[in-house]
Structures are given as C-alpha cells and as structure tokens.
Image (cartoon, rainbow, N blue to C red):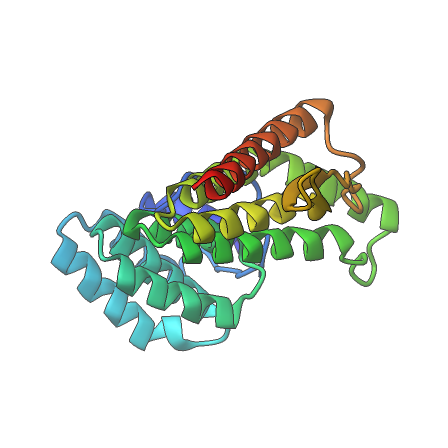
Amino acid sequence: MRWTRLLSGVLLLLGCSACPMFGQQIGKFVPIQAGSEVDHALTEISAATDPAQKLALIDKFAAGPGSEGDNPILADGLYVDYYIAQKNYDKALEYGDKLFALDADNFQNAMNMIRAAAEKGDSERVVGYGEKAQGILKRYREAPAPAGTQPQVWDDQKAKTLESNKDGIAYIQQLVYNAALRAKDAGKRAGLLTRFAHFLGFTLRESGSRRGRNILSAGAERAKDAGSGERSSGERSEQFGHVAAAIRLLLRQDRSTRES
C-alpha cells in the first residue's frame, strides 16, 4: 500500500535529527513510498551506528536515489544532522545552506543552522539564521490557501502547525538572544540585540536625552500573526521580557560609554 510521510517524520524515524523535533513540518513536502529504494536506504542509514558507515550510506544515498526529484532535500538534511552529531559545524552549515537553496522555507533546517552557528560561537550567523527563521514563519502565516483548499480549513491548519512549533520558536529565540549577549564587542552586541528586538517584532528607535545625547528606547509594535490570530498573553509577556532585558543592557552600555 502506498503512503507518504513528511520530511520531519523521516528525520524522527532516523533518530539523528540535530535539533529537537518540536512540531509539524514547515517547508516542502517530500513523499516517500513504503518499500521503495528511498525507504530502504533511509532505514539502513537509521540502523547504522558506526559514524563512518553512516556517512558512507548517506554518500551512497545522495549519489543514487537521493539525487532524484526532491530527494536531495532528504540527502542534504541527512548530511546536516550527521555533521552536527560529529560536531563538524562548518560542514553542517555548508550542507544547511545547500538545503536552503532547495527548500528556502525549511523551518527545521533553520533550527539546525542556528544550533550549528551557536555551537561555533558565531553570533552574527546565529542572528542571521534567526532572521531567516522569522522570515520562514512570516511567509507561512501569510501564505494563501492552496488550490482546492477552503481558506478557513487552511487557516485552521496553519494555526495548528504554528501552535505545534511554539516550543521550536522559543528554542530559536533563546539561542538568538544568548548569541547576541555573548558577542564580545560592545558595539556588535548592541547591534545584535537591536536585531533581536526586531526579530521579535519590536522597533528600537533613537530619542534625545536631557543631555542632548542619543539613547535607545523601545517602541513595542505588537503585530498580529497573520492567519493564526494574536500571540497569547504568555508569549507576549515572555517576548516583552526578552526585549526589556536587551534594552536594559543597551542603556547600560550607553551610560558606560558616556562615563568613560
């Protein structure tokens, strides 16, 4: 009997996904027929416990059935997971960028890239991939219903998918926030924290102080999540907390600069 499963389901089956699987897939649907060559190859890769053997099997898959149709999405995802597990973050990022070229809205890949960049200590790339993840979510929320799908059914489906990914979204926000805080250069840290505030849907604007100097203050622009209603009060409180913490740090840096 024919059946299909989502890419996220494949990664869960393989048991080697680099990041926790938080919710339903956002990205391209990759169908896999039960009993097919692809199915057998993925099962064999999943069963391999020796790293060298697993890599050889992934190479074999990538050169064979993994090169057909949308299967390179599977192959590149396997490479990403493998190299993160081996702590080879440069190679993981290389294959993650290849995967984005094939599936620009792959939310699981965004989480993997953020983790790999965080493990490398590359704050700039963590924030950059965080912004990419935010773009993926924005496009998904605003996506029109596919042909043949009722708008209300589509909106309900999107709402459920976003709800199931809320822990993944929180995971990304925490990694991005931590990366911004860990930037060694004060100016770079301030810039990354500003981008983090934008990432959460807030705007930082300059306003004059009594001494005629510029300080950073927050203008909270609470946007509705298109297609999924407003953020819950709990999410808003948490996001306000992160932004407030970022702004307090920016203001302390500003005062330190003025006093030095």
